[in-house]
Structure formats: structure tokens, C-alpha cells
Image (cartoon, rainbow, N blue to C red; front, side, top):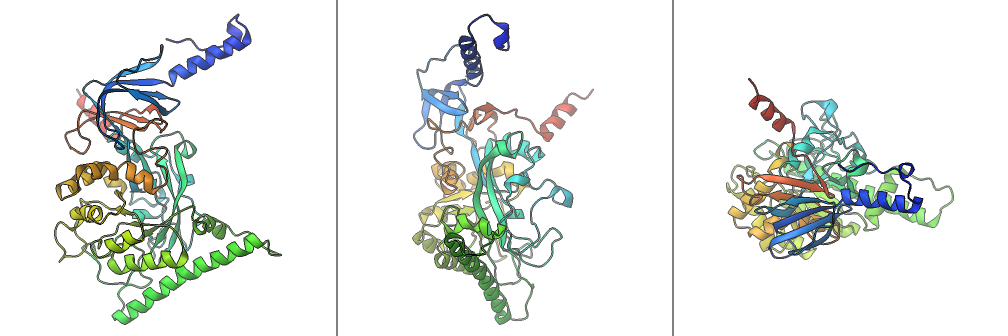
Length: 452
């Protein structure tokens, strides 16, 4: 066991003692994963390769790497190494038990709440993080509104919530939210209105804000309400743009406004707007809205994609697809509508990633991708959709999403294909740190397995 360094405890010159301490700590942070089959996603599979991890990043890769003295070596012969998976739609750290109001920190009250930041509300001790980690998920987008949509407040009020706040991209391990942060302002969440109707199988319209008043008597009335809601959103963006002008012109008497300040990165094109829009009309109008306001957007959970894919492609708008393990939107839709959406997106040339949009199903992220493969999506594209595609959409592909030199060592070691149910995750590294593969369910399993 390595003895702790103490400058006072040795008789060397101070400089040499400090150098020895630095060397010791560096050695403890360095890991060599040896003789694994590496699937970098950004390139072809590599057999019998070693990966050197240093300072939390991938320092080197190769078949003939020599391990520096004193470092930890992980023998991985017969195992595969993949980049850690990225879930692009969660409430991780914000919602613990859906039916317990005090454990939910999503869906704050207010129609326009851009100043709210999901990141600073993340509970690093949430039991949900352990559940997803053991299945190879190393990072996630967490949204300030439940299910990636507005809900009208904690009490479930009918009023729509349009801008829910800033979604955050986080690692799923860390002592606190500061340590977990990858990108605190990953996207501004906007829940686009829809024309109220009878809804889907669940009696509602998942993925979008509820109409201010459900069940209008006529389509004309529903359309009038819909147009009013879109105008309200446009008015808010126009007010933000006016604020931007006054801010840059140093107008006499100008006062800062937290809501408007939060909108500046959006108007400057530095932060995308994540728009929840599932139906054809909503998707089309969201595209027109983005064009009018000159903002970058990402569409969340588009369901009627076949009718809008070409338009999305022409505007170079990426999409985050929901669970393929779900029923169709309407009773008369094809039974495999959700399973074939990824294939439709791929054939249309869209950039897309997967999100589970429910903490309950977060662990199933790789299996949602696998189901898409069974319904026409090429395997390589499915793997990209839970790794590098997500990183590219959220603007962090230079840091994560594939196994390349210089990127964070967010890795999973498996004994097979991670999209197969029978595959076991043998190891997970987040920023180069090995993560203990345990959660509440595993602890219960061990407890009762040892029961007398």
C-alpha cells in the first residue's frame, strides 16, 4: 500500500519531495485497460487494444502500450469497451418518486421561466443514478419539466407552461451538481402548444404543453386558442429581443431582468431551444417559429415524423426520439409506429438521438435502440444515436461520445453487445473514475441472497 506523502516526513529537498507527491497522485489517477476489444463508434472496431486513462481523459490507445510503473491495470481480455451511453431525455436528479410531490423538482409554476436552471436543483444522491449507471449510461440531459413537456405547475393545474427553464447535460456520478456538470445550459426547454383534441391512447398529448382549456366545442375555437398561445410565445421572444437591444445600447435607466438575461444565449445562437412537439402541425409550426425568431432548435419526441422529416432535414434540425417501447399515438396508427420512427429519421438524413423521457425507463435506453434495429435502423446508427450523435446535438462531441484521445474517459466494459439483454456490464468509468456497480435493487438482491 502506498504511504501518504508528507513533505515534513522526508529529508529530501522540498522541491524533490513535492515532485514525489505529484508523481504519486498522478499514478493513482492513471489506469490502463489492457487487451480489450474497443468499439470507438467514431471508427472501426479494434481487437486486443489497451486504453490509457490519465487525468480523467483518454491519454493513449494501442495494441502495444506499455503500462507506466505503479499504475492500476485492468485486465480486459475477452471484454468489449464502448463509450458510455448518453440519454437525451430524462429528469434524473430532479424527480425521485412521481407520486410524491416533495421529491419532485420539475414543473415549476409559471408560463415563462427561462431563468430556472435544472442543474442547480440536481440531487447527486438520487437513487435513480445508480439504476442507469449499472447499465452503462454515463451521462444524460435532465429537463426542468417532467417528461420533456410542460405540466402547468406542481399541482397539475391546467395552465400551460411554455418555457420551463434550462436543461442540463450531466454525468450521472459525482458528489454534487458542480462535479456532475458537463454543460449547465445545454438547451432552453420550450413546450410548444397543440390544438386540443381527444388525445392519444393515454387521453392526452404526450410531449407538448396542454392547451389552456381542454375540449373546446369546435375546431374553430381550438384553432383560435392554439394561435393565441403561439402569439404569446412570439410576444415573449420579441420582448426579449427588445431587451437585448436596450441592453447593448446602454439605455438610460436600463434595469437587468433575470428572465430576459437568461434568454440572451438563445437569441445570440449560443444555446439551442429544445421544443417539445409531437404532431405534424406542431412540428411544422415549430419550424416556422424557429425560422421567424432566428434561433437554433432541437425537436423533442416527434411522433408524426414521416410527414415532417423532409422539412426538418431542409432546415437541418436534429431530433430526440422517445421510447420505441411505447404504444402508437392514436388507436388507428400502425402498431409499429414508434419502432419505425428511427428508421424514418435515418432514411430522411436527420441527425437524431434517443431519450427515454422517464426515469422509470432510463435503464432501458440501449434496448430502445435495439428495438429500432429490429425495425429497420442500421445497427451502427443505433449505437451512434446513444453515443456520438447525442454529443454532437448538444455541442460536446469534442469532449465525449466516442473513444478518442483527449476525450473524457466515459467508458463501459461489457461481455457482449450492450444492446443485447443478456449482456452484462462489467465496469463503468466516468471521467476516468471507476464507478461501483450497485444500486438499491442490487443491494436487495445481495441481501436476500444471503438470507439464512
